[in-house]
Length: 242
Length: 242
DNA sequence: ATAAACTATTACGTAACGTTAGAGTCAAGT
DNA sequence: ACTTGACTCTAACGTTACGTAATAGTTTAT
Image (tube, rainbow over all chains, first blue to last red; front, side, top):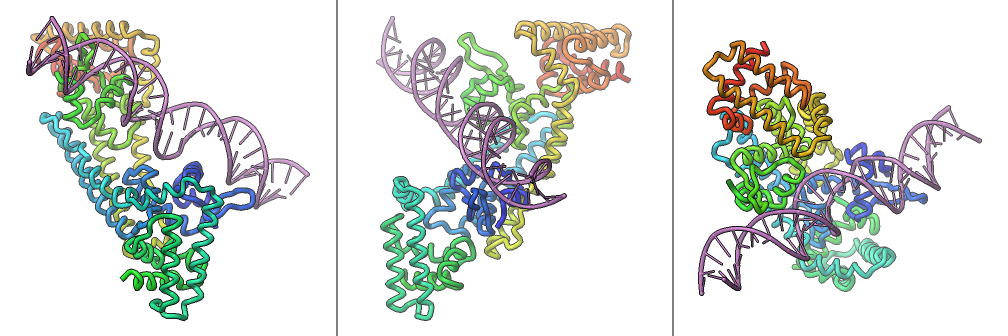
């Protein structure tokens, strides 16, 4: 567990920025000490890294949050988009470079060409990426439902879900396709639908991938149900959804 | 002469931005209609282009203004720095690209490497470039002296200087090295020193280059003293300074 | 035990515009 | 001459992503 100071040193972002990201819910510390000091672990650092990547592409922090917290968020796909966007940006800078070189040689840009400053392509792609994640109906519903909740409510919901995963953990000796396990998957789906957003099979399948892929979710689930629970749940979910 | 709408269309910056740039004195329209409409000509567009280039490199507008309006501003040298900075930026994005690709392949960035987000090199170079232009003693003195002046005062000073250039224009049949012309150079230098900033020979020489190079200054000077005055004055100045 | 170094929470400041709001202008059509 | 629609102007407040104190509690090191 690291303090703000250490995270700041490693990542290069200011302490104030970390505090701010906490306040807007973009990057919550993994824990707090009794006296309120922020404590971060590796999964928080991972999240921070993702945030910084999006930030480099000039996404508003609100959108970054929406995207990362989006119910069906797929890190791999997002990274692909990031790569694409970075490539577009490189192109953009090459154009600027050419413009600067041109002006330097000829003295003036006679053609009064401003196309080098044009970011339409980048903006459009960014808008589209944004839509893919944060603008889904599922996310809107999720936001709607979370509005009327206290932080206590949220803690309870998190506890409930973790309990479901703990139960999954106790079923790892059974087959993922067995009736009992499948019933447990349905329980998860129903709980999400009731308390968060309409969890379709498609979204559920996406969630499953996130459960088994290394990262924040996988760590938390394995903590609740024991090593390998994330992968186990994913298998069960994929069977359920097919 | 173009209206805000047209400039906005050509350059891609918003009308509000043009109004804002006017208000902070970064980009003044070439003229106003009787009813107060802003009118821009080609030299304004040139200046806008330069502004946008600096803006792409994330210079604060205040610094951009200081730089462009700096007494010894050398467009060529600035462009060279811009090019250098753009190249650094490209490098930066390549690092980010590699990071994104890495995360995508391995799933997680185990090394928790944040060096890709490090912009120290770029920042340092930018700071140095800033120092080269806007942080000179001459510019500070210039700002100090301009503080207590009304816009009327400024108009008068501009008129005085243009008169000096008109006088230069009438001397184009003489040699740039002749006594009369050299005396006129000294007159210019003295006027600038008294009313604006301590105009050393070095600065004067830099100004000379700006007078003969195509751009805003050259256009204005040729308007005052006739075609070729800018180049003529530059020649005289370079002789004076050597 | 006491300084030195951290950290927390307000809270106000800043940069570069976006966004109305309210009102005057201009060119075209009737 | 008059209306209409497209432009433009000047305030003036809103916004984002923090920076920068100010004040107060906390932890570590001697």
